[in-house]
Length: 328
Image 1 (cartoon, helix red, strand yellow):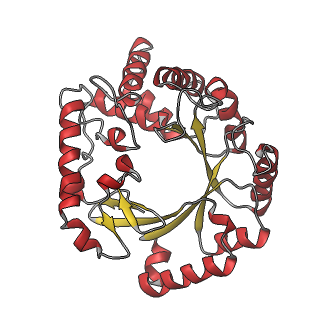
Image 2: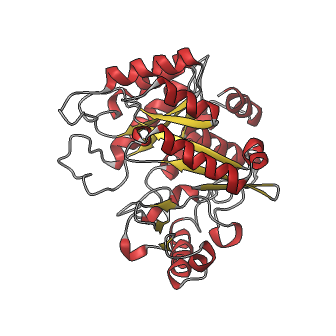
């Protein structure tokens, strides 16, 4: 669940994750949406105060189910790396060709979607080709650096070190910045925006859960509730939505302890960073990391430095960056 504040208003996004949410029966999805209409209100859903998004591997889809998503205005995200060998069926078969065919189906039905690519060992050498695929479709894409997880070990086929992922993002930036028909690609778009604010001496609202409320909460199937950075670590569980109201969770010792961890982490890594202010510190809290870095965050900070040096060497003006961000 994601909440965004804009000029005093709060927009809430309910994210359908899995497993694979499109394996849910259509009547289940319809039932949940009926409850949302009843509890949240038709007008609020129509105005976008509450939104639904669904992340799918898009391997097995049915036309009527896609039409249900479109009818209920459920935003669709597709996880497709385009590089075979990692996302396999239970029988060990590669899935990329089937997913590409289903993307064609989305296009024919006129269903908009965004894409997520895991930046890892199997994709890091082909980031420009992957980007070009999505640019040709006119689809926004997010390259998500592989985060620490139980299977993310050095011997894994998809494993990648932070320096390797950083080099891949630098390569992607150099490719993306000069494209005449560029599409928005995260996190490069956000990082370039940070450099623009840094050049102008301007600041964003800082990522501060205590002051501004929650941005993302993860709900596990057993009802346990987590911050992204503490995902599924039972020792850092905030509470359980099956047993507690959200007010009980927020007033609990576990929740207060999580706020204190945020403050300590930002103090350690962000307090002396030259990009603090232009950067809202949120990259530090995006996903679980066993070891964030010696002095700075592994990915965002070195990318800030790289992009900053690039635009200064080429004497880009703030207007130049604004033009790139507007059309990216």
